[in-house]
Length: 209
Image (cartoon, rainbow, N blue to C red; front, side, top):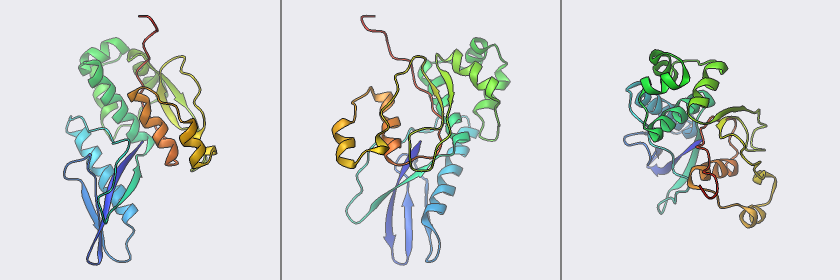
């Protein structure tokens, strides 16, 4: 999971602004790393939004930089990404924390804690909640920039995806599948060499149903 930042040069400072996250912006003075500054700003903004009980916006899949600017893709740590995925999926399912808790056979307090950025959920709890949302937990370790793998909550019976990162740019574009909207972010993340992630994917509807 990655969010795009629009980077511009303003005098001697480098500015980074996240179009998906209103008010989330930062800058780096000469000698400072804009990537580190952008990571701190994004992670803090997402954590504060979750802690306030709000639903953070999803990142754009593609974005074009304005003239004179560039796009910087900032990764979200797996621990935070899984909180975002759970929150998004609960919203899409139209469930309150109490309703999801009943489905998962856990307390409402556990669901609230699970969605809080400071919590450190166990695999067992994640599996229960994933099942209650019609998904399952999938854990993978990744070599940096080499494959589209990580920590994921994915629908049962999902087909294996082509590892696009092993192909040339031309080959990736020629062979890139055109999946449903909820899977587009997964393919885009692979092109940016994401290191570990956590996400929820809604199960696909059966054909003819």
